[in-house]
Image (tube, rainbow, N blue to C red; front, side, top):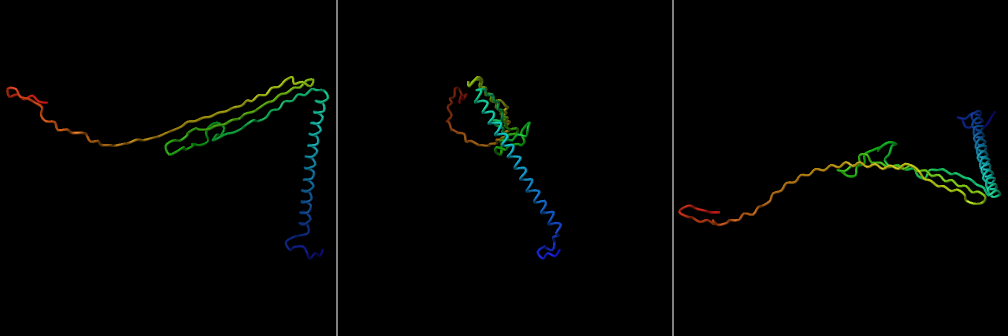
Length: 164
């Protein structure tokens, strides 16, 4: 074949392989999108059927479970993951917090009337604080004391001096 437009570092076979790969990727993407669409249509059909049954019979039961909150601070699964320096003399040696909370909702409607409703929340919450503080104190001072000159308040009797 004579092609003036083909780059020097390209071969006709490489161009064919690359074109087929791009075509395959495009077809795979379209098939994946169609699969997702079919799943969505199935979900909509199931929900519509369930709704129709509830409306025609007046009976409906549903249980929903989920995670309400999952949060952690300075926590690696069993303890503190690091020492937190609060300032130069105070540190939090084993300080951490975590919360893992779930919920469950159960509802039953019988003959178009609410016959059962239950909502629960459960989980674990833990807060641990271990503070280490160090302080040193040194002070030195001098004070002046008052010195009073008091005159001798004494007296003598027979040559013996009594004074204070």
